[in-house]
Amino acid sequence: MSTMLIQIRSGTMMNMDTNVLVKLAQAALDRGHAVKVFAYGEGISALKDGQDPKRFPNVGGILREQISQGLTLVACETCCHARGMRRGEEFEGSKIGSMTNDLSVFVSECDRMVTLAR
Amino acid sequence: MRSKLFLLLKSPREFHALEEMEAIAGEADRAAVLLNDAALFATQEGRLEELLQVCPEVFVMKDDLQARGLDPCPGVVEIDYHQLVELIMDEYDQTVTL
Image (cartoon, rainbow over all chains, first blue to last red; front, side, top):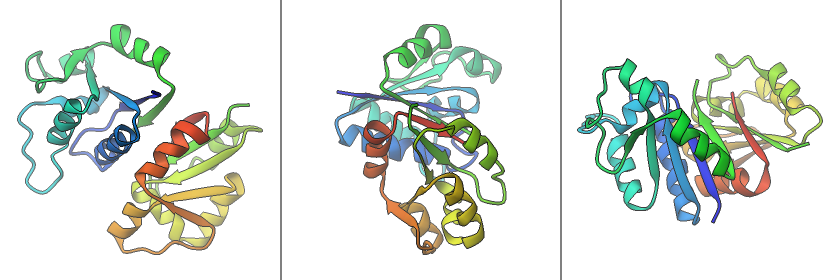
């Protein structure tokens, strides 16, 4: 099984990048790849529990479902801290981690890395 | 050299990185995928021609064309997300997002 690492740096309400994230992740999962997502910068909004957008896709809800399919979702702790998002505000199955302990390992172990950012 | 798959997300109006693409690709095989507002490249002959001079193969996401009610110019290949995964995981060595 090959592993795709996706680094998301755009927020869920900023533009359509997080929609690309969930569509790309789903297609990769469907094709039997492992998918790891590292949220950095504004991308940490993807992990926030309780997302309830009225006119946009619920990226958090989709990611939560994809975690049940095997997707790994980790956010940068420093980015969360800077934005006032505390440990425990992430939805179940996701994790507030770090570049040192998580991203570095993901990069070293993945077969391909995709960055979604502006 | 490692082959490069460029992922373009910005509209032609916002995108000014053709020289960077050329520099990053060097002598490597390369292609571009148009996502989100970058799909507009596929409908603007002049900008598409500039892009094709740097990347001989250009793909565009069907979803993004359909969402905008657009038809692509000749020379662009429409793909879905499963085909994009194949390009990323099997066909090219690296992706570069611009």
